[in-house]
Image (tube, rainbow, N blue to C red):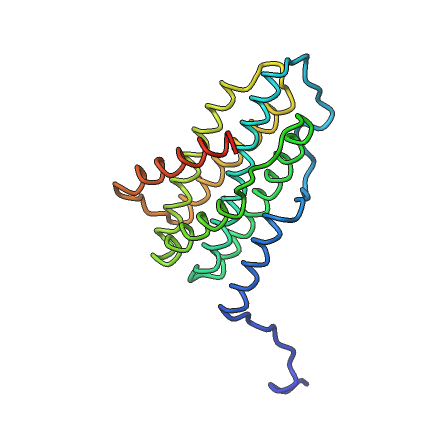
Length: 220
């Protein structure tokens, strides 16, 4: 029979440990080529003939989506860090894994199109980490509400990209379609977990910040 002293126990990580882990994840997100855990939805698909202008536009749009995934990593990492609930922390970490697949898929497609990822990646991550930290510090229901609003805006943004991507760019379109479906699922999951609806002007401020990000990332 084991005594209380001899029973194995699981080490509970401190907030400082989790903070260092989040920073490590951030460095990996920004500087280490991402690897997906799932198959790329564009695998085996080929694009029809595209001219240089179409390829550049497709690469720019996918660069914007890649920046969005850098931000998603920072948001989920920071929200998990400040979550009061272990179950919710796990929820954020699972969502981050799906977003990590999106990060890898978009990076791969950008390379195939002959484009480049954003040169401002560290700034995008830091800005999103700050946003997520504020949401997380406000409390779990508000943090979840932030997820809902973010994912709804991202879903609309991806729908707009499907309108703008060249019809011939079948691989990019397949990736964006998969991302769009999973962002919607993240929003629904956050609602089911008890998200509170964000009051104005927060959604409007988030839309304005997203507009700045997408405009700059399309070029740089």
